[in-house]
Length: 490
Image 1: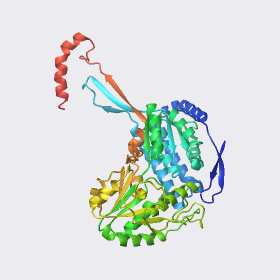
Image 2 (image 1 turned 120 degrees about the vertical axis):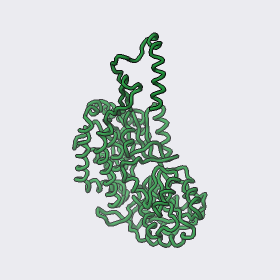
Image 3 (image 1 turned 90 degrees about the horizontal axis):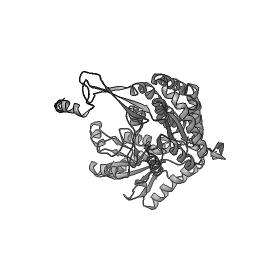
Image 4 (image 1 turned 30 degrees about the vertical axis):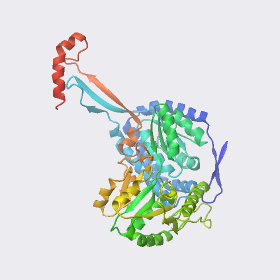
């Protein structure tokens, strides 16, 4: 069966996509499991060299990649380029660090001289990876590349809307040396294909909604396999007293409207000192209304389209319900069908009741909710008053902002920036607290999550060895007791 993929920019059909079945998925895992055996024996340094070649290949074909990204997602050229840079950062980081991360390491033995001990990471086998439609290239490289460099093979479920982007990235990787069966891509019915991936994988990495993430976790737990989840967010930005309002407004725009707000770490709630709210609102309104909407293959527009008619209905529905609950539209709040079928004006809402849906549920679109606060304690309380904890931002004096950052329940907090400062730092872990996920991508743990830790203990041949018979304990027990006391002190 073929799936019709719709162009988010024009509303017309882009192409037909093959729908895989659960049987197809199981076959891909069988092939991947066979291929993984030889791939895992390839020295980490050799795998790293392939990753460095992939960096060069992505750079060489970045225009082609941006073109297909825009066609499938509707994002602007600027946001497509931002995705290229994120993908390159991930590949480069793991190309450089993976050989060292995978080294066998000596640890202190249980009994000095008698025991030598080592630990080493071992690949889990075949990793199942599920990537969403909003950042198909960057999120692919952030998960697939560390899994491969750890010695695993991968079966990736790409979202149907952006499957061609993922498959092009995979083809580029195969061309520079990744074995064809070591990285395979499937797509089709989300439930059938997604469940089949989880049911066959040795480890699952999932990016998507919190509701679906919980189902993946349950399914993985029933099989006793590991998993990592990056889920939803309702991310706050706190503008501190004394912050420059014009600079804060620019940061808010960059943080809320990246990829037309279709980003798990984008800012959706903006907390401003009550005494500065009117002035800030006026500055923000002017800046938002100067943004340009459209899509071209050049850096002409600030925001692109939403990814689908369903996304447009989701975003406009949130705004309409917010208005019914008492919110005031400062600017935006309109479908821009004059530009294309899935364009929505960047929107700022104010005068929002604290219990309103718009302050608690993820919109995943170009909408900012403005909320006043009377003290920083109240700002922190309001920022933390959500089931999510993925990302947060603080704008103000860096020294004071750092103090505030440690009070926010979020996996990432950005100072004088919205999300790019933490996302660009590949050496640091990225993930969520509360209902925003489990475990982390990026950093050393972003690769080591795809391994099992093996401990090797070596009993050394010395004149006095470890006891193996009951009568030997009569001679050794007093010495072992003294040794235990001594070891506890060193």
